[in-house]
Length: 404
Image 1 (cartoon, rainbow, N blue to C red):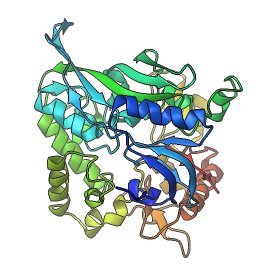
Image 2 (tube, helix red, strand yellow):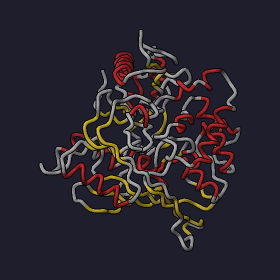
Image 3 (tube, one colour):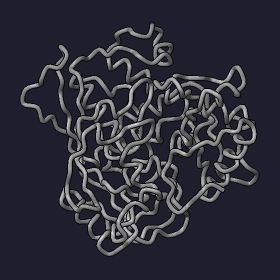
Image 4 (cartoon, one colour):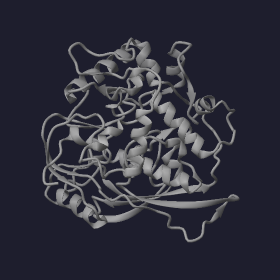
């Protein structure tokens, strides 16, 4: 295409202004050269994946936006090694590969480790930046290594899972996009943020050859009607998770792939499957309302609290273990709803609102601006803090916007 998309064209939130220069390199060298071009000229750089975790200003973006067009998924193993009595198989995916394409690739090969991450939008490259997770799994636990371009050292390097410093919805990569990290770099280093210092080129996952995973999530176990620890076919797990996500409005609108700017970013057969699933949805009208899917998924992370903070919450507030005896996780959705923001809440005369299906999703109901979304998000953050003394942390990457 000779034209340039707007951010509204390439993000799931469907907001954002025009782009000065948009590049879609289709080779590893091309990705590196595009990043280097921006850095060498001191231009603003945004490397974007599926646009599912990004909120961008309504103003024009002055700089270069790079979207990796590479999407090859391979199995590099000649012989699958055996670890702890189980066959281990590696999958390598280029950074631009659609995440759910990778999940389906793994399940078809009889591999487990990421099946609970079915239906999460975005790309492989973004998955390790955010350390996506759901229903008892995180991508970080299945990562073997991540090949990256180091913008400061100007070289390709390989980061192990340990190097990646995975945590709850975070990683080394995400940390290097923060302003405080930039302050530690030499003055002549490229501006890191919103794009991390390390730009993902490919990810190698280490999965187990076993078509029947063990259920570790209590929520998923209840949905399946089984006990935690039960063995269930991965195909059944995937379909159940897609059904749960659909009921919450947490599946992206598959019709976005009808756009010429999105049509090549996911395997065509999988786009067709997603559209058929969307059209076959039962339940109430809200489940079939595309406006409930014009979101960035969960807009806030679940707060990690000290024992004292958790004790101050109402008795019926959710409390989840984190693996750290001194920390307790609570539900951002519960806090939002009990602070007075019900499903479907919206500010007066605004085109942005909470999803009618899930209070964690801020949605574009049609024609919303980034400004309206930030107004809504800011109002929710203030309301929750006033009610419970807890400050919610947004999950999406903000480009040219801030909470109001």
